[in-house]
Length: 326
Length: 278
Image 1: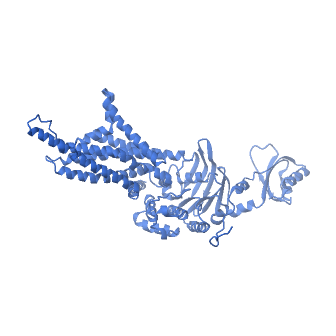
Image 2: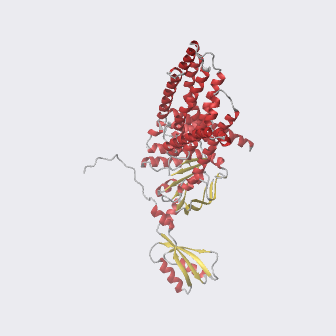
Image 3: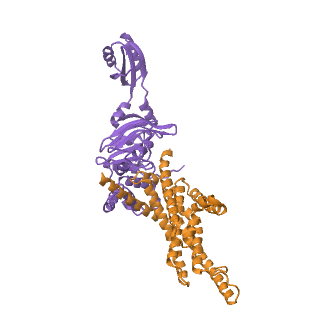
């Protein structure tokens, strides 16, 4: 439903994103996770057709977001970083206006507005002026405008930002309910958010995709795992079982990169993060008489990204704050 | 394929209408537009009385001319009071509008930029020019709403005139007024798409209008072909031919060119915005 290939965007000479590739299947919720400034908003804007990409392609429902912009615009609902609201309009008037410009037929508009307000919990605010709404309600109106025309693809840029914990739960529930009939891509910098709402996660850092996987797999990969890349000269069939039998090692993969000298082999060894994995690899290889040409710890990019993420979130306050005497 | 295209065209038309309605509505919910309208009506009403009945007014001048004829003095050149009144009054409304128009156009795009709603419009199935056209139609409609009551009160005064002014000339002068206003509003709309500051947009639009007014002054001062070229470009000059009851198709073409240029530049500037946004 969403296919992004080698997407790049450069502002002046600063690259915002580079070689971003991922896809989302129909009915899936894809989380776009990354620390602030990683390029999430840029990617969302390119997907929505607002920003032109410098390189690469992005396709939504088979249409290129740049060349078939109008076709794409009819098929997406988009909540930008800050909800695009007209403060002088009422909630209902605003939703009606958005329904019109998104091409909802006149007869369907009241019904669609009703459904959107119902889903976003706005029914009791339908005649309120938007400028009088609290931030949480404005965010909900923003989500309502993204779903009013029942688009196949919904793009949400930080949908839970600025909401209180109870509202966050409501919004997440709402997003989950939308999945199935809609393909949803949402960006966030909050780790627990993706594990709670998303089917799959694409992690982005400094404008590059670091990993794409299910939240469970990602968590497992992070649970104290470490990887080394080894280059040896000699019999790879001897080296592989040797390394695999080490106590600390979980998995040994044979890599086949180009441009390797003859009889050279590269292996990726994954194991537990306990100390000594590197030494153990080196010792056993040398002991077996294999030439060790290179041994390096793989850049723990995923880990770095996670360190920059918000990994906790405030829990819902059970009772209203009580006066504290100092 | 043909059908899809027709559907899209239909959608664009409906979207222009949607933009138009929302924009027009926004004038009615803004306190500022009420203040602007009130001041415009107050000044318009004052000058209506002043031009007709003031000490140097047209009625006084006509009475003097009558008196001179009765006393057997050499009669001053005769003049058509109704015609002169219409020309002077609509011309005055044109001058007043130069102060009012920047205030009407200043919020057209600055507000959209500030609220982030431009991102909504830019990701909806509606081309930039259609947004600009809808907005321009809305602000021109609001301006017509401002002028209409003054037009009615002027027509009441004109109704008492003998010989009466032909309604064609009367209507034509207002058509000219609205066309000039639409041209200036189109340019003002372009200026408002360049900045996020409403005040800056108003000041820049006003400066631009002064510049256009200057073109007229320069045209009158310059001799020869250059002066002629400038005078063809002068909005004020073409507006004056309308108030004189003369329909000149070249004036119509000039005004329409200004309007289309304004819409085109606005669409381009909104498009360019996407590239510079960081």
